[in-house]
Length: 330
Image (cartoon, rainbow, N blue to C red; front, side, top):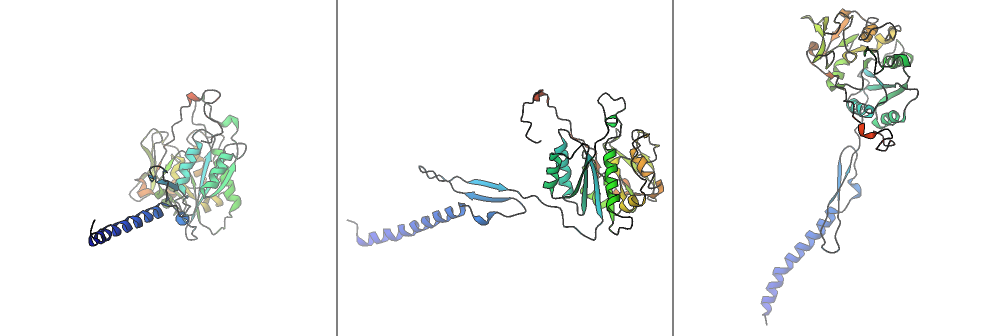
């Protein structure tokens, strides 16, 4: 028979450890249980749930992830609005291109996206995408006449694409704003197959007439660029393809002050009688002279936009009837 004092000693030793283990077990379950206040907006939120096996009581942690899209920065009355005009057309990579573009635009304050579809009607795909972005946008559509569309067997691949769509967007701006409108703004033609640095948008925001900068991966070169002298004036063009064009520049290589667009109602992109590569010149020669150009991007020594183009996907395994579900939007 153990003595009474030995029993008391054992109890005093075992009891604290029993209480400690009990408290630790209860607090572990509390931490693992889902809470109602775990859901927050503006980022990634995590909650842990407990799942106990009836046999071995093993605890399994399950992670629930929720994401809330970031919205564009608050609108500021102190900043000029950048009106971005983007022509687009239906193709397998269209949604991917527009998603990448919208993710860039979400970081640009005071941006108005004018997206113009080359189609008979507005498509559900583009409509849903625009609504989901949270951007300030205008959705338009106009179909390019068949005789102006690029054909696979065409000898001249430089038939203008997106011209009618850009002109429709220019007409919208002229019908929406008056010449005496006090709201400052800039117009930029951003195709959906380019990549844009956020710095570019802040560079163009101060455009007085027409600002210009280099564009990478065009004309068979690493980049094309305006030539700028020591006085900061544009005097020519660093390009191989027809450098004697009035404005030998890519569509993504310039921005125009909104007031200048409104004050020159005759300025549009010409569709008829214009050679490939002269679309930009057909608009700009109605707006400015070479001396009026404002070089940006450190006097045109920095590349802030790339004509990257998404590779055309190879879908040979789809077959004529389609292997995957055509109702799944890509």
